[in-house]
Image (cartoon, rainbow, N blue to C red; front, side, top):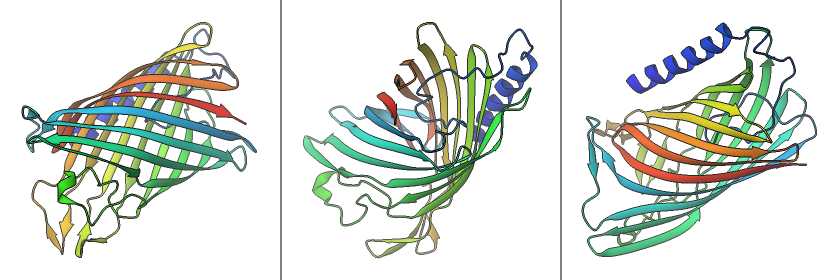
Length: 303
């Protein structure tokens, strides 16, 4: 739980700082620069009534090693390699100015080399449905706040895996995961600060005949954007995930919990019609989790 604690403390500290320094000389009412936002963290502003935003996201990640159950980092054994390329599509549609719906789908390719064996597979991963409602507008020291309800749908392959594929044919978890959360955004010209917290609750699923209940998990994110001239901006975000132990046929699986913290700097360019961002993600802390490096690129086009 220490990752959650420090993640929330960072969010509170930066939001508090933005409030403390938000004097008349530092803010501009109605200031709303264009940007793609962070890669992972949610932004509170919605797309707007009758507008459709389409956001492709492409990424390539390589696994450098793993964190054990005490948070110690170990490198991959010599000759072992593990990587993934993915293409996501995220779409948002504004039903009203305060209410929107969204859909996220992913197609991924998994690669692995282990003990001179090579494996590669590709397919759709799990998908997400979202709905969000803005219940608080940004005013004075108050951030803009949006409530989130989401549902992870098991559209990726999760059972009947081929042992010769070295787990590269695993594309999803098989569980339906409802979740709720909150997204916050505060402007402090020339900065824009975002924070979110989302709790998800996996439902029981049978995986190859085994009654499986994955642990509940929290996603928490904090991001800061700094806006430059001519449509450019710099971005830095911290992304955390914490998940409890898995249970199979009612029995807890030892050391099946996981936690990770990822740091991601990026640079973007945007105008009224299109917003772009390129970022680098690096796992810096974790427990029972992979240590990954990733390059991510995205753009948003609004109709």
